[in-house]
Image (cartoon, rainbow, N blue to C red; front, side, top):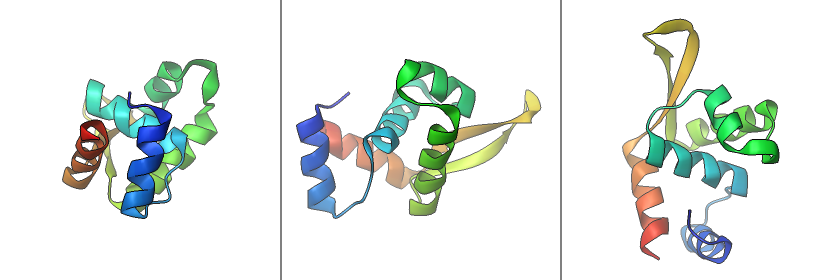
Length: 96
């Protein structure tokens, strides 16, 4: 993942209001592909609880960086994936 300073610089440049948790979620989905809230929570270790990850995903969906869709393998589960804008944002952070 990009350094904290890099993330802050990109967020300031873009005028975005993203938290570290939201950037972490974007980065995880970019690297690993579609993820569930549970998988994102587990990949964050003790840093992020499930409600916090859910709030981060809610904000990313609101900003158009991520979308939720039903998991075809388990209809009780929801997958989070990046939109084209979400992918472009992560790529831009990584280029800095």
